[in-house]
Amino acid sequence: MATIKDVAERAGVNPSTVSRVLKDNRSISQKTKDKVRKAMTELGYVPNVAAQMLASGLTHNIGLVFPPLATPDRLSEPFFMRILSTITHEAKLKDFTISIATGKSLDDLLEQVTLMHQQKRVDGFIILYSDQEDPIKTYLLQNNIPFVIVGAPEGNDEQITYINNDNQLMGRTAVEHLHDKGHDNIFFVTDDLKSEVASERFMGYVKGMLRLDLAYRPMVLFDPSDAEKVDELMTAIEEAKPSALVVISDRVTIRLMQLLSYYQLKVPDDISIITFNDSIFSTLIHPYLTTFDVHIDHLGEASFKRLLEIIQSTTEPKCEQIIVPFTLKERESVRNRRSLSQ
Image (cartoon, rainbow, N blue to C red):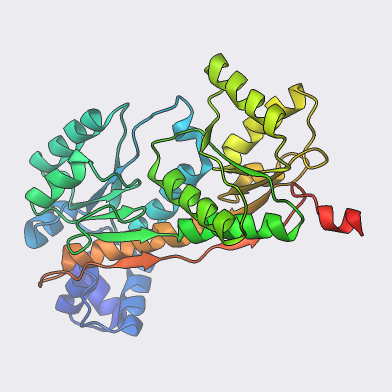
């Protein structure tokens, strides 16, 4: 079995340099790190995790906290699977592993996070949602535990690093795009009225409608498991006859399109849809979805790298808001009504 000395000899460096590379020490140049890691690969060197933990005091494990499972299919949302894959990949590059916390409520999640911390199984947490009254955020702050949040800033801005898209700007851009295509009567549809992401995107929708001097409406709930809510949604659509919908995500859009089809409403012939996340769902069915690419890989990469910086920092970490840009992907689900009137 290869040792640190073997790696050092192969790479032409001192054993202490190999040790610093294992800790990803900033004093070591990238060129030297690449050379040492190449030697590790060639020799099949596997770091002694127990020894690393004793030397550094780190577990080399990160806790990933999913949002409460408000709906049965929340975990099937492609956003979460994609960001999990990205964070896991980034962690592997730094010889870290990932532990996942899920639950039906914030209390369930808090219990898991508390246990992970008390058993010293993680070095820090990435929280994949933002909630102003989140007891997990409070617990982590009170116990000085490193963490970052993927989501909109919700208090304690001077103590927490947030990684996010500009969801309000996306909501406003959605309205402006639809208006450019000749749509003025626009609804905003979500599957979770309490979601912070939905609130941010809805606020952008409201601002966009007001800037264009258009009448906006309250968020409309689409809950396929609640027949009464489904009836309320379709009654609102049939009475107000919106020409376009801004829908919270690709996954929800697919379900909604199935419902509209049942009521003999075709997308985009009868009603246009613009949505978010540019997931695999967006090109699985016709019409292909006009959607916002929120660059999930960038969100995941930035969240892990920033958390690692906080964990390894020897000084008080700088808290900040990291905004990942978005891209509008124009496809088939939005009808250009202006071209038809010309």
